[in-house]
Amino acid sequence: MRIGIVDYGVGNLFSLCSSFALIGAEAEIVRDAEGVRRADRIILPGVGAFGDAAEKLRATGLDRVLTEEARAGKPLLGICLGMQLLFEKSLEYGEHPGLGLLPGIVAPIRDVIPADYKIPHIGWNALHLTRPDCPLWKNIREGDYVYFVHSYHATLCGSSAAAVTEYGGTLTAAAWKDNIYGCQFHPEKSGEVGMNILRAFCEEGGAR
Amino acid sequence: MITKRIIPCLDVKNGRVVKGVNFMGLGDVASPVELAKYYSAHGADELVFYDITASAEGRALFTDILTETARQVFIPLTVGGAINTTDDFDRVLKCGADKVSVNSGAIRNPSLVKEAARLYGDQCVVLSVDVKRVDGVFRVFAKGGRENTGMEAIEWIKRCVSDGAGEIVVNSIDTDGVKAGFDLEMLDAVCRAVSVPVIASGGAGRIEDFITLFRTLPGVDAGLAASIFHFGEVDIRDLKRAMAEAGIPARI
Image 1: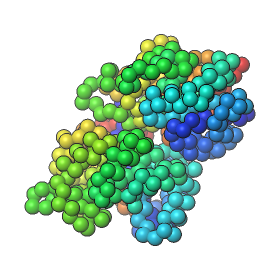
Image 2: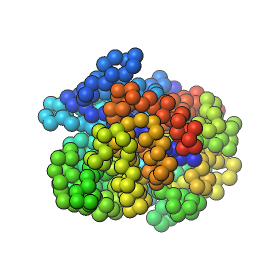
Image 3: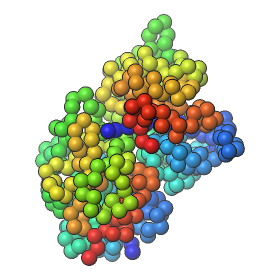
């Protein structure tokens, strides 16, 4: 089983590679359609602005192959901005279309939190499992802490919201639909809890 | 609810932790990798590595141990010391750092914070500032606290935040090493001035100092310390439990 970590010039892949090495999973960085097709499971990472990242995915043609592979049932996990890219669109600096693999719209967290709360939402916060049946939570308990750094989150995702977190208001922490997964937090920076989530993705992953 | 972060800071010289570290039961530990693993397993929420090496040789050793640490430690890792250019950001980020802390480099090169924030995002840029009262005014000190820049600290911090600094580490020179508690007056002034996370540094001597800090100043997001953790005077797990008992959100 081979994990493909998609490199499209957005963000630092060092910790992700180290995390998979730690849990004993074979992971490689993939940069093109062939690499994405070759992988058994796909990680879509990312930090920075949604518009830039979506444009980079389009420019490299990775948007098409990711959509094809995901629709064909290959397990895909988006992390942070990589999660946000899975939704229909984002309202970060204008309006940008995403991959549309998950239902929902990425919106500023400011819309749901009080003015005296700092943005970005940065630090360790507790997961509340709205979909305890999500395979990622195999070894996760209600209230486990994970590390967040973000100013936007997914809204209107309906029953695909797999976990939320509280920060003056309710923020979407994770999403899941069939073989498509998203974590707004950074499992690769969330210690043992994060490693358990990555392990669960390697083991379950919704493969069919 | 988001938790208050506890952050041990490791000074690293020529690839070794400075000042020797003497844990109960661990003996003398000078390997930053081993120490980082220990802290990660014992409740630290984040780690800061400061490179205090002066030579190019020492710098290479630092990036080696940073890489090794980042391979084995899966909590956020901030790197500071000798960060003067965006190339320095690039160098440590490639070795696995998540955030980069700038201090004197930002004073010498006034566009550094802005350039780094544009390239790597605000969340990556941590402004560390050494502050001391001079005739009743908070002044910014450079070169490890040896040189008064004459700049007023709150104005400097506000400027760096508007340039894109995503977090502020406030080191009070007045309370540093005294172990009589954090500099609440100084920290309060910073919290009132900016809306990014504020990390308190300098003055912690015992668990109660952290409790007082977070109770008195809800705007402070994290407490940073070095020797009290390294010498086992404060065990981070005990500290976290005491915080939770005092009603302060802590990751246990």
